[in-house]
Figure 1 (cartoon, one colour):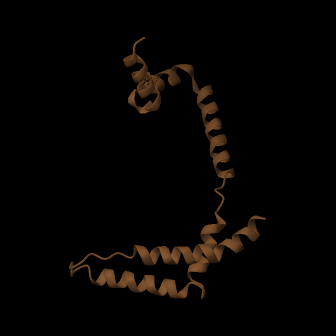
Figure 2 (figure 1 turned 135 degrees about the vertical axis):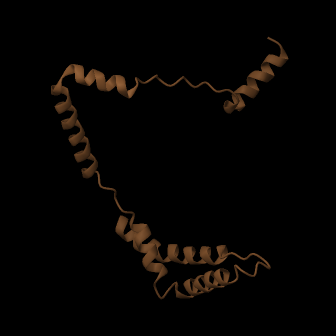
Figure 3 (figure 1 turned 90 degrees about the vertical axis):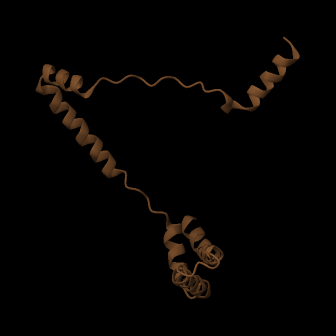
Length: 134
């Protein structure tokens, strides 16, 4: 093993994305073939498939998505008196940018104002969130 082999081994180890080692996807049967197989087997399996589908749907309904309390608290804080100045500046900026879209002198965005509002909302919501999570 020469020096070049050692260097190429090190490079391959450091860059795993340089080689793709994926397996080929499994070949699926065509839907027509599956339908013909179902019709050959009879109606007993079709009833079983329906029951399985109903069970899956019930499981999905049972698994309700949990709402993140942080989003709700931050939204309340954005509209609170504590973040009123930041929200006012952000709303003014949005209005100014919307009205100035025709005057394309210097493109302005409201990123800074948005981050000030988001920071204020996060700071306001943090203590409330910790009290809920404890």
